[in-house]
Amino acid sequence: MPFYTTPKTIIDFSSLLTGGQLGEPLGKVDQKFVASMLSGIHQSESINLTEISKSLEEKIALHATHKRLSRKLNNPNLANTLSKRLLKLSSQALSHDTQLIVHTYEIQKKYANKMEYFPTPVNGTKEGFRVCEVLRSNTSERDDLKKCTPVYSRVWSNQTPGYIDDGQEIKNTIEEVAKTLDNKGLFYFDDKSISSKILPQILKDSEFEFISLILGQGVNLSYKNQSRSPEDLVERVETKYGKTVFKLVPEGLMFKTQTDLDLFVHVGSLPVKIDGSKRPLSLIALKSKNAIIGEYVSPIITSRTRLRSRKDLMGLAESIFSIQDTLAAHREIRQKFRPENFRVLTHDRLKLLMTLLQAVIYYENASDKNTLIEDKQFLSKPRQGELDRTYLLPNS
Image (cartoon, rainbow, N blue to C red; front, side, top):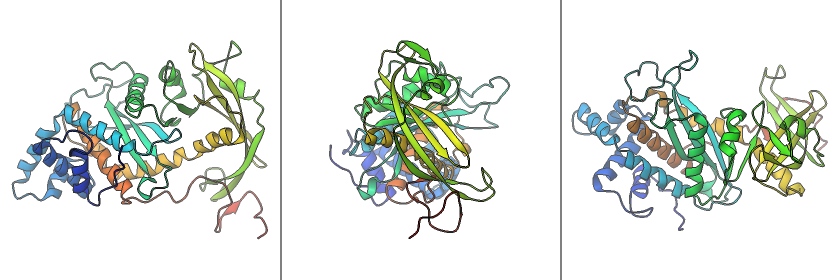
């Protein structure tokens, strides 16, 4: 497919998204609506329709602009069309190793009980609308493809028609993305928002490529026809490849001051399967050691097999290090739009609103409107500057 350079303005980006380059052009009414919404969200840094309407400064009454936007938001077909076109843009220069990061978050609405499919409390705890989002973390050398960009999102509640559980919603999200991207890219699961307990449900009978930390209970693996826990198996792994990395530890987390922590990481793997599945997988043992804190072992499961070289094993293990940096940067960018301030009453409106928000963030990231991550947690060499260290600096 042709390579699409990022347009200079949000209106030009809207034209790319709705015009004939990515498929059949949308009708003029839909094109105007999308341009208004993308421009309004971009200018107001909000997905609240009142704020969006104010930012457009149309020469009509504010409530008339608000009413028009609200009416046009009730369009599930447009949400699906824009989602697929964002995916198509994201498929540019996609490789076997492109990171596709899967995470979930919640949008809480304290006083929206009248909203369609408003979530009901679970075990006495108030629920919000759930969002599963897939982010592409780019490694291309093209200047406009270096940043993380949102690829796809799915919004649901425990009252949405057809809802089974969160695991099924996450699996549906991944399968839609994998299908559209022709199974290219490697899906990374955020272990902080996707519990290991639901991973077997998501991964069983899957065909997409993936990698994930598996922490805590929930996953049982088959090794030599015996069911074992990941924690048990990693102790058996010979970790013959290693290197030293440097982790930035925030003030007060482990030490009184901000500290650059040296870690010797070493890795190895075993061929395994998830219990009840026939798909061959690999269990990677990632062991990290420091003279002060001792040794820690992290189990990683991946669809990649025959990991017999330093490059393959260490490359996959190191790629896990960047996930939380990427998610933290994206969370900060997303939160500036205050998604919890939405004020719509139907699920279809919320879905389209979140798709439009993704499009705006895609544009801003790709056109350098947002900053890159400055303080990465892991580096391959010591950091510069005045901070405490758990090692001696090498002689220059």
